[in-house]
Length: 139
Image (cartoon, rainbow, N blue to C red; front, top):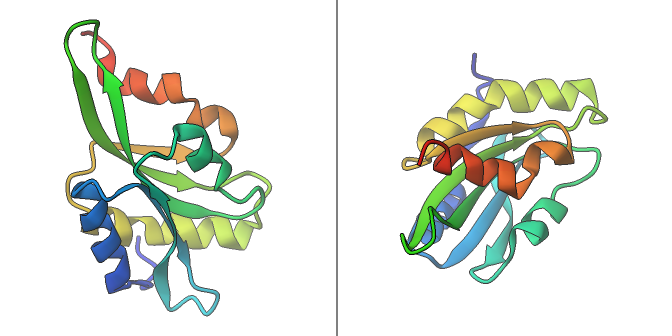
């Protein structure tokens, strides 16, 4: 189900720049007037995972993409995968949680090249080792 909220061009532009390795992450939000999804923040290429997680508001929802670099096994080199995150904390107002859930499809489909989708309701869902494990299991 879609909410009809449009994804603004700046979201695509910043995402493409992330794919070109200009940014480590991009955080998006639904505008207060509910007419569009916009870029809220970008993280420098050197931004660590903890900075990304700390950028999420405690009581509000957000979408984000993060260019995650990890090592498969010693000697196998560095890998990079883009993760899409729906941050929807349990303490956020139910109306906001519904708006973000219904609008997720619009933004997620428009961001080509995402390797993993993460729905996070609390900080434990964003544990870096758990997220990296999605890519390294069975290797």
